[in-house]
Length: 416
Ligand code: ZN
Ligand code: ZN
Image (cartoon, rainbow, N blue to C red; front, side):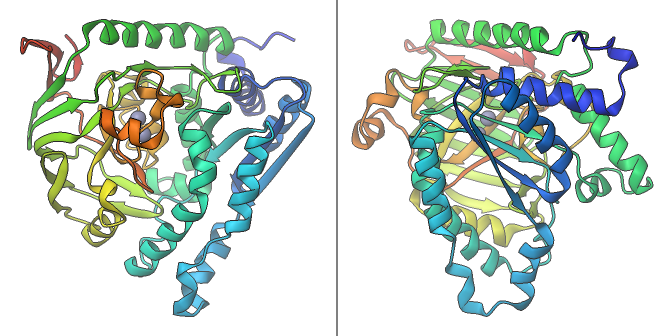
């Protein structure tokens, strides 16, 4: 059945299209595959639409793990102090087993971005660390792109209330859904083919950068004066990727970035974040850090500094960079003018860097290399991977070639 014209769709029809795009384009789900989905209780309508499209695409089994934000808070309010080093390792081991036996992975994000903001940062840090350790073996299958996976978002009341505090709950929720449909490219006549066209554009941008083979990028902007060396044999990627199981997937919806691997020992200078970072329910604002030889030697934040310090103390790799991404300041997410307080959207509104784990697919044949071989190329290793935004319409970026020639790459936040 053809979708109604973009301007005449009901909310239900848009939700259904988002689910269809997530299954067909995001996951590229194959007949006979299992699907493992995580969602919050407020995302049930989207999770059900996705479940239907997954079965229609031939899925044999769709399993949804629902997360209850209120129950998560109860732990902070009533559990004994000793509780916070515990994570459900059996659950993450089970997820890993599902991935190894061929399941695809879909995450619906959209929980309360400030859920844990008023909780004890030490407990938040311990709990996050425990989850990172328990999830690591399963997460590696994702970061190594061994299976097809994607992330989409659902609007939720708590999230909407933070973005639109002056509106009634109903109006706020409607506005957030509109923003999600708009930035996830659902408000077009044929979202599936529009996504394929968009994907091809990102691939082309990545191919251009791969031809250039820059050895470093130089960033200049308000509060930022920074040189970032790229990993040896780095590969720029954008849009979709063929996973190790042979399935073509687009891991993030929306996605506007082309990204690659920085060298873990080659970052120098000062970087200032251009947007607040919502990390595991805590807001961190006004981040400014200084790097020496790839390592953060000084870090400040105007809000949430304690959580930031705990985050970069997770392990040695948490003080180093695992991703560099370029996004024009005119992307649909930036054009919306919103700070979504959700990395999936905010990282596609601005150029960014990520602390922590590198994506092995961002070096040539990286998925076949051992940990030591990857490290020798400059790949960072960490329990965390946290993106933060450093791009704006005031940021200039230059590419430095192997012979030292400096070329303009972005000017005032746009491709030069
Ligand atoms: Zn990114
Ligand atoms: Zn990232």
